[in-house]
Length: 375
Ligand code: F6R
Image 1 (cartoon, rainbow, N blue to C red):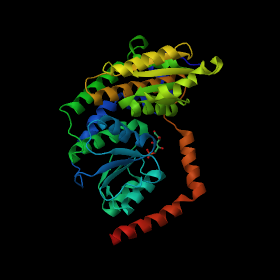
Image 2 (image 1 turned 45 degrees about the vertical axis):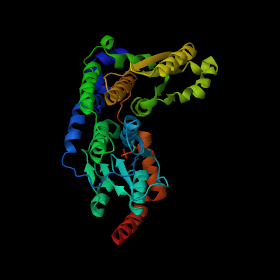
Image 3 (image 1 turned 60 degrees about the vertical axis):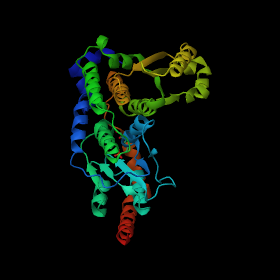
């Protein structure tokens, strides 16, 4: 049985959160500043590409997704995210491919990386080590090395901010003055308001966790809150260990909304979380209100996460950070350690075993080096 009172008992909460996920979340603004610092020394190897593809999976793909949403109405070239083994057909020597893998060992990302090299794309890699780092070194490809020892999803600062800085340096986008600084300031504010020492009544993230406890949370975002909605859904999966879904307006009004016509005994197990923003366009505001009206009596709870800040980046990241905190609080309330992701680990190990990856990789690496050497 979930126990919200544990959230205001730091010692008891720490016994559940054995690997300190909450502390990592509280320190995210500090990590963001460190991540920006880390990029200062790095030389971007190429000029403005014709398009950019971020290749990564899970927690390592979300940085690219956030960049995509942030720059969608400003970037002068297409930006996409590849969460697969293979790159889209249009990837060529004018494409900048950025494989991102926290561990540097994710097979889909390594496969996309190898393909980028074979197709002679411009390549820049980011990881905390692993084969992505060693191969990049061997092939003379610029690699951004981020600190190790984090669960990938808790390293969001390092998986996002270097990419944001590089987009500016490459000329993909001109940073509006103070946008990154505002994002850091607002993230600090959210951390201050959501940290463990702020009591339940004053802590929106703790209250959100209590409201959705015992339900399948469905996160509804809109427009540039696509990646944020996905991130929060994944945080509920990985930190809280509960099923979760996300959908985005206006599209969800054309299909997902029909799901709420299901029998009440099924719907009573779901809660809905709307991502809200005081600057949301009028047509989105009306769509949210209507969707709320239609779903209110069907789900167990309807809640909101309100974005903070003025500029887009701050608003996106503030909503994400509140969701991150809520997912950890939900885990702690349920007596679940947020950090271990046993099923993911087990699946990766079993994939390696069944596909005999070690030998396979060795062969692929050798052929990649030979091809690269031929130029
Ligand atoms: C997040 C998480 C996963 C990984 C994903 C890819 O904490 O554990 O979503 O991010 O399995 O692994 P990496 O990030 O090492 O490429």
